[in-house]
Length: 388
Image 1 (cartoon, rainbow, N blue to C red):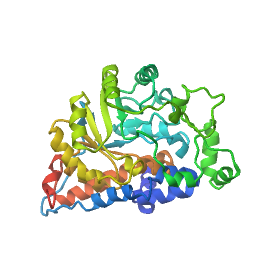
Image 2: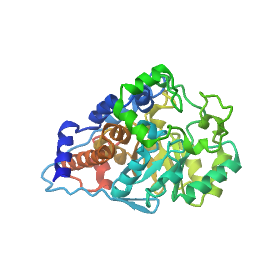
Image 3: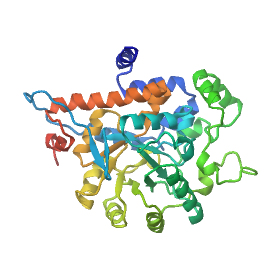
Image 4: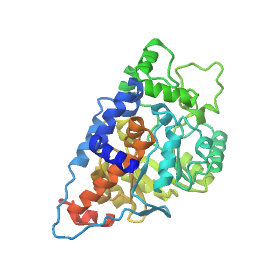
C-alpha cells in the first residue's frame, strides 16, 4: 500500500519530466545541473530537436473500443518489455552518487537496456553484478589499439553484450554553460565549488556516503595520476578521433552486437551499415556537440530510406514525453533511448525517481495510443497527420 500511495503522490506532484527537471535543479549543485542540462553554443540544436518533435501530429480515431497498448519489442535479437531504454550519460555518479548502479538495477527490473558511458563514475566492474542481461556499453575511440583491446576485454568480462561506438565527438565542444559554472572533472576544491556543494546538502551527503571522488574511473585507470594537470581529464588525454579504420578494427575485435551512435547523414549511415554495424543510433548528442545541424527526427526517415527496413534504428535527442517516443516510432525508429530524463529523475528522487519516470513514459504512451485507437507500435505511422 505504501508503494501505491507513493506512486500516486508523485503522479500528482511530478506528473512530467519537466517537473522532475525542476526538482533536480533544486537538489544538485549548480555546476552539476549545468553539466546535465546544457547543450553547446546558444543551445539552438537542443531547441530545434524539441520543436521538430512537437511539429509531428497525428489523427485521433474514435469508437475503437478498449486499447491495451503492447510495448514489448525486439532489438538486435533481444526482447525488451518497453520500447525505450537508458542512454549513456557521462559522469552519472556526479549527478547523483551511485546513479549507475541504481539505473542498472531499474533496467533489469523492467527489462530495458542500460547503456553505461565509458566516462561514467562507475567502472564496468562496479556494475557487473547489477546489469543482468541488459547491459550495453558506450565506447569513445581511444588513441591506442592496445588500450582499446584492453578496454574491450574488461567490458566483455563485466557482462556487457552490446557495444555502442560514439562517432559524433571528434573533439570536445565548447559547452559554454558548463564553463561558466566552473565545472571540472573531478570537481575543483575551490571556494566557489565548495559553496555550491554546501548549498545542496542532500547531494553532498550522498556523495560522502559513496566515499569516493566522482571521476572518470574507467579512463582514469589507464592514466598516470602523478604530474597530470588538474583541469585535463582522462578522457581528453586518451580519446582518439573516430574514422573508418577505427570502425573496421572495432568490428573485428568485438564479437558482440555493435551499434554506431551519432549518425545523421544518410550516406554515412549506408556506409556504416555496409561495414558490419548491427544497429545505427540516429542522434546529435542532444545538441551537446553542434548546434547548427538538422533536427534529428527529420533525418530519421531519410536514414531509414537509405539503409532499408531491416537495419535496426535507435533514436534519441529531444525526447521528453511518451508521445515523443511514439513520434520517433512513426518516423522509422525501432527503439528510443533517453539520457537526461532518467538523470533528472535520479537527481530528483534517487531510485524512486527512476521508477517514476518509467511509469510516466508508459502512462503517456498508453494515453496517446488510446487516443489514436492503436495498440501496437508498428501501427503508429498509419496515424500520422502528414505522412510525408
